[in-house]
Length: 115
Image (cartoon, rainbow, N blue to C red):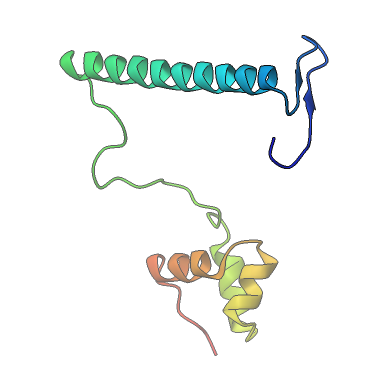
């Protein structure tokens, strides 16, 4: 509102401009949004506490990892590309992943570079 722009809602025909009524209305919208966020957080916490009290495990088990990754099933392709002396950075770009993802995949799968 300090910039001088106005917000108009089509459905309810609210007009938020620079006048005092607009500031009050914007404050009320912000306050109701904050209250709603707080209520959602409280409901979520209560539900998680209830589930824990029932003895149910919440979240991923400690130490477990996903069984599949973005590069799952592409081991042979990566080996072939490495044997053709294509850089790891270029391979990562071809496979549309970050180079650190490729490096981690190569390390965890013990893929050796064939020169």
